[in-house]
Structures are given as structure tokens and as C-alpha cells.
Length: 132
Length: 44
Image (cartoon, rainbow over all chains, first blue to last red):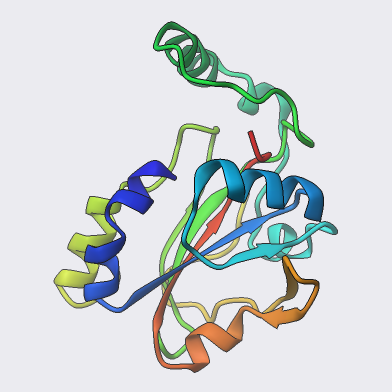
């Protein structure tokens, strides 16, 4: 998320609107927005209808694999603040780029929590004028 | 596993903003702009 915020200007220059979606409650959404200062539109999907429509799965063994545990170890070591459990920690996220006609240009359901699309990949895709 | 692939039409879902107003994902791309949908994990 921090990567998206720091590169917001580049994304806007290329006409990319970032929209964040969470299955968290409205209460936790407001807390999270205050903590992160995210400038992007934020939508709440408590029933996970969107997560289901985009095929995003919940999996304990994938959510708590080595990469994610290592991420938290590094965060702890770096002294980053951690906020504990706020909802189903097994639910996985994902990234989807949609063009102005509603067509999917990039589909990246996360295999595990640290598996997210790099901003550079999206910028390169858009910069070259189309999906892969 | 997700069946969403490049080239498909994006599923349209109606969600809510933090004020409780209904918002369709399609509202964003129907405005003619490219949209990056970021589905988050839990809000930690």
C-alpha cells in the first residue's frame, strides 16, 4: 500500500485510478484509513461478493506460509507498528487492472499475502499500451 | 483458483463506500478511466 501511495502522482499521470476494496467492517475501515492516510477511494465488501466475483480465495496454509511469516519477522525487527488481527486473516487479496471499456488488462490474484503486483509492472504495462 | 483472465470483461459488483453509499465498480471504468482494483487482506 505504501508503494501505491508514494507513486500516486505517476499513476494519475497515466490516468490510472486506484480503488481499494476491503471485506473489513466500516469501523475498521475508518481506523485503517486514518492510520495509513490512503488517498484512494475505499469500498467495503463485507459479504465478500467482490472477492468471490474475482475468484479470491481464503486459505490458511497459503496465508501463513514462510513468505508471510518472514514479512512479519522483518516488520517486527524494523520496529514497524503492527495492529493485530482485524478480520479473517486467511482471506487473500489481489490486483486487477481494468481498462476504460471494462476489460481486464492484468489479473493477479495473490497466491499468498506478499504476492502483490509491483507498481512498476503496471506502469510498464500501461506505458507500452496494453495488456499481456 | 480465480477464473478472471486478461481480456475478459471485469465483473461488476456493487459495494459501499465508507459513508454507506452504494457504488458500482463499473462506475469507475464507465467514466472512461483505467482502474486498478486493489483487494486488500485484513486491515492490519
